[in-house]
Each structure stands twice: as structure tokens, then as C-alpha cells.
Length: 165
Image 1: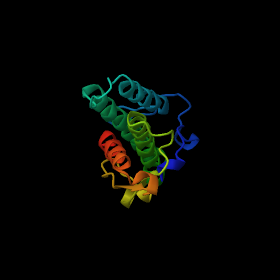
Image 2 (image 1 turned 120 degrees about the horizontal axis):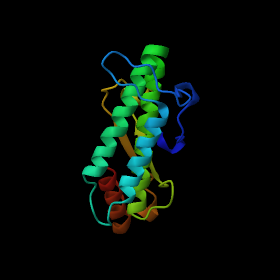
Image 3 (image 1 turned 60 degrees about the horizontal axis):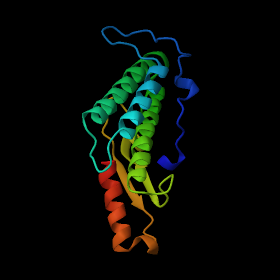
Image 4 (image 1 turned 90 degrees about the horizontal axis):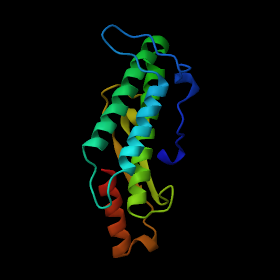
């Protein structure tokens, strides 16, 4: 569940800031390069004008962070095995979704941490067995509390999901 995410790269996947050994024809990516890509994504989201949809800068940042995470996972797969690689990719997806959920929550005026909303990972993602081109099976849960059953609460939830997707 994404409410229990950490925002730092695990020490098991850290390269100590050194570039990783490259696989033939595949550029290596250090964990710090992946962290920089997350920051670029946050900045792209923060620079969006109010009432606007994510544009090319956000989409480009999303693609960049995932491409760098996949490249780092390839190296982990080569050096530590598929389990570490899958865990790293699932953690990377968690971080991306946390950034997007925080942005979507702020956009619709939700309190920090978007209480009453949970994103659940299903399938290989939920089992932490991601592969580089796995799909992201997600379930969005809402508390359905009586305070959110109003037309305003439903509109806020619809706006949150729209901003997230």
C-alpha cells in the first residue's frame, strides 16, 4: 500500500554514487541519477499552472524517471538477481505514484497524505515481482465516510482520480 512508502532509495540498490558497470549496449544509471529524475518530475508538476493538465514536460519526466529506474534495475538483475531487480522496480513505481498522488491531492485541496484514499498494487506489482515492462495493476480505495458522500465529496474524489490519472 502506498501510504507506507519511503522516499529514499534502499541501501541495497545504492551504488554509492558511482556509475554502474554498463551492460553491452545499455547505458548504466546510478541510483543518484534516478533520484535526480524524481526531483525533475516533482519540479515539472510544481510548475504546472492551476487548472491545467500535465503537459509534455510532465510526461517526459515520467518517462525519464521510469527509463532510468529500469536501467538501474537491469544492472541490479545482472549483479544481484531478479528478486532485487523486481523489488527495486516496485519501489520505483511506489515513488512515482507517491509523487503523483501528492500532486493530485494538493491540486484538489486534500490534506497531506490524502486521508481516506489508498492505492493498492495488485498482480506482479503487488507481489513486488516487477519486470521492466510489467503493467501497473492498481486499485483505488476510498473510505466512503459519510462526510465524503456529499456531492462535494464525490466531486473531490472524481477530481483527485482525474488529476492522478
